[in-house]
Structures are given as structure tokens and as C-alpha cells.
Image (cartoon, rainbow, N blue to C red):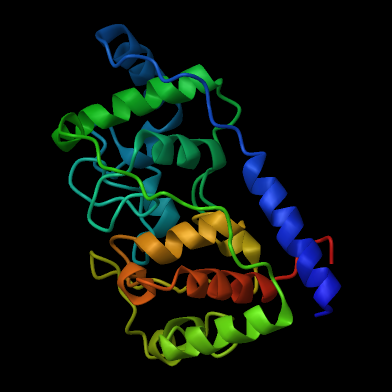
Length: 257
């Protein structure tokens, strides 16, 4: 990839991130808000996530009876898509982001709902898990990228990718054909077979595919899956995170290239 194209990719991705909507003001979680959220949930979410939010809705089997991912159990399971440390509940804005964007290949975007309606359904979803009533978790402070994309950064990112053993799941060149996956050893928290992300296709990045989305995934992991948090590995050298981010993005050139 030409250095100029790498630099353009970095600028485009940074601009995309900063242009993302923050969302409407979050309503108070009073009974009326929850009741409005319940009506929205029953129309849009119940068929996959179930009446009581346990991930056992009638359409859930069509998503994946014997393989992951299955619809999220809001009552007892962890949450994959978070800006909070591994094992923590997601922040309200994490939930808002997931509802707004959807999950590629799994859950549609509900951006057609108004921002107020999205906050209302999130308020209702949180009633399924009493842990949400406790002290809210502290989200990760995701910084502005500190290492512009370049051939040198991409090369260093690839070296770190191999050093951490990412090729075992994602493959030597990120195509999702690693030896661990081929051996059928990748399982989710329920023991269901789960496939690693094909890093050469941004459409398969379930937690988002811009610079800061990938940073968030690397630093917090995807709870309930074999993808761990690498926060401890990057401690003291944040530039290495951005080298890996730059490498991963180089595997799936955007339309501008």
C-alpha cells in the first residue's frame, strides 16, 4: 500500500469517528420511561431476546441453534461490546452504540428508532439485570490516535500481531483461518463453536471497524468469547496499540483506496 494512501486512510477513519452521533440526552429511568421502553422491546427485540431478556426468543434458533453467536441473555451473561474492563457491565453509551449500529451479520441497526426511543428501550433492557442498579462501571478513556498510519507502523503492528499469537485464531494474514479455528477448538461461554473474525473484511467487525472501535476491542476484549483483553500486554506502551490498529486496518482497504 502506498504511504500516501495509508495516510489518507488514517485521516478518513479519524474523521468518521469524530462524526459519530453522541446520542440524545438520556432520559431518567422512571416508570413511564421503562413502560415506553417495554413497548418498543416487545415490538423490536422480544423475538430474539425473549420475554424476560434471557436470549430465548422464538427467532433465536434461526440465528444459530448449534453455533455462536446466540441472542444475548441480558439477565446473566456478560456483554461483548463494551468500553469498560473485561467482566464489567457496559456503559449506557455502549448499549446506545450497539442498538444504533447493530451487529453486522447478527443484529440489525435500530437507527430507525428515534434517539429518545433507543434510550427508552435501553432503560427497559437494564431492568432485566439488577447489577445495573449498582455503581456504574467506568468506561475506558479512548484517546485520539497517536500514531499515524504508515508502512513502518503497519509492519510493526504485524510483528506485534504475530508476537501475541493472533494468527492462531485469525490466521497468518487475518483471513480467519488460524490453526486453532481449523482444529474446531474455538468455543464461546456456552461451549458452542464460534468463528474468529475475518480481519480482511470490515463488514465482519462486529464491534465496529473504525480506528477507535478496534482500539476498544483490543483493550477490553469480547466477553464470553475466546477474544481476551490485551490491556495488560499494552501497558506502558500505548503506541503499540495503534500500530496493531493500523495493521488490522491495512488488511481491509477502504473504498477510498
